[in-house]
Length: 384
Figure 1 (cartoon, rainbow, N blue to C red):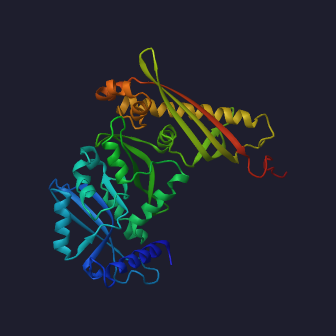
Figure 2: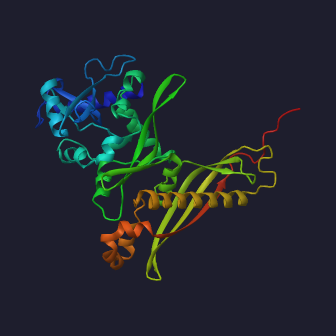
Figure 3: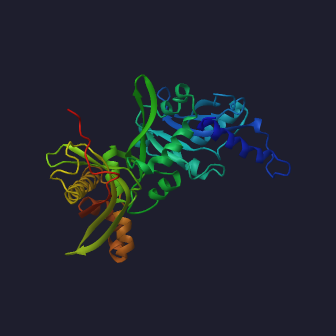
């Protein structure tokens, strides 16, 4: 039984609880459609919102080598209207409590997401821990429709990718409650992971890499995977991943696995102006040495640590400057840090924080510690 089938079995087991004698909300399972995930687009034909729903097929979905799913697309002026139309068309009630993901097209994200997520956040049957994405494809439904080629429930696959993302660190992990919380918090701009279709050797798969940047609920730009990792460092959200370090000649030579990382953000007042000091300490293991000399040459562990720290410091500053100068979006929560540590100053600056953020002085100090070099420091020697 594959992972999709196991998740489907778990879902159906949970559904049985709804039809057990004595349940307060008795509903036949055949009268419901279990929603796994949703994609929101702007329909080109009529300009209306289009919602594509991936649903678990409870009829025969547990047969060997088969995972049950189906997709439906409807258009309407509002998400609520679309959801109601789906019920009247399918004749089944949509069960939202098992939905795992909601994907927005870039077009919808750049228009503003309030109109698309307000209903979802209000409905009593939806969950607040659903993962949110912005599609790099023209239409978000292209991601959902990958299920026809991968023969898997795409929403479940994406949810599992987000659970594993902490080991990669190339995209933020954002649930809809967290996204809405950022929209409602002064001094903090929201982000969402980018998802796209990767094609290799004729096979298409979903990939998550980078981040969409928002000012209020409107998407204003993107960060690539490397920039997203630097953003996560600045926000103290790094749980894993790899740091690549060049040798003294500037050639990629070392791979450091991130074991743990701690970031401290401290706002202070200097000459009447807010100053942000960021200090990161990252513990790593040396997992790869791509030099013939290995660690027996002129490179010491201390030298690699120093260069890794300098590179990380430079990359964090670079993404901060990009957010300041290009997007004017405080995706790091510096305003929230000022609110916490300098409450009186925040009271004065709160209303004009977007302007303050653009001109904010930020210093970064990054320390990388290599606490493990795996099994050996010896390089692999080729025979004559």
